Amino acid sequence: MFARTLLLPGFLLAGLATPVLGQSLAHRPREPATAPVAALTSALYNDQANLREATDSAKAALATEVLRSRLTEQLGAQLVPYPLIDSLAHSSAALELTGGIPCDVKVACARMVASQAGARWVVMTKVSKTSNLIWLLSAQLIRVSTGEIILDDSTELKGAPEEMVRVGVRIFADRVARTVRTGGHADDFPNGEPAP
Image 1 (cartoon, rainbow, N blue to C red):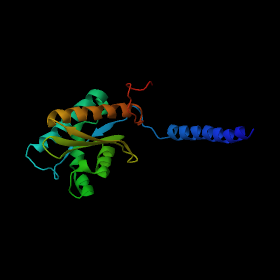
Image 2: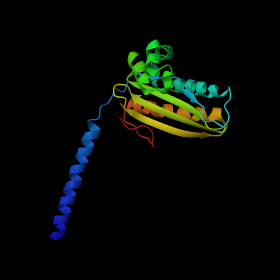
Image 3: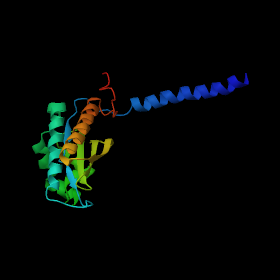
Image 4: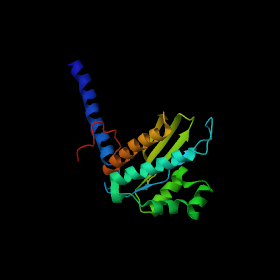
């Protein structure tokens, strides 16, 4: 009887905790699976590199190209046209908001640009150089309305920089597409996309 009394309250607490957790996840705001997505150009950071080279900027350009190509492949018309995003990111309003630094490194600016373009999601990426063989990809998927960072990836890219940038960005872009399709539910999806 004594053991049953101890187990019963514990069981009740465990039983009560599950619905509360389930309710908080269920009531978490979602976006439509077809919500528009904006992708800013990839930023370059090489101030801490042991050797800065003129060709470093090509890695950020490659990251931008791969990101936008992969997202177009995955999301199609859901992706806001790049010329519009690039134009808004270089506007006087964007420069004023950032104090003259590029929009692609400031969440507030990225959200403003995406909002002006009618996007519900914005993607930011940055390629950082440590050395010729070690680069870092930092990438975020942000809900425009709240500023909530849904995906926040940081991946060390070791090896041939061009190939590693391609692979790292493709993997992130695929995660973005899966997350957008679920309305913002971030998951690693180890066995492919979740059932609808």
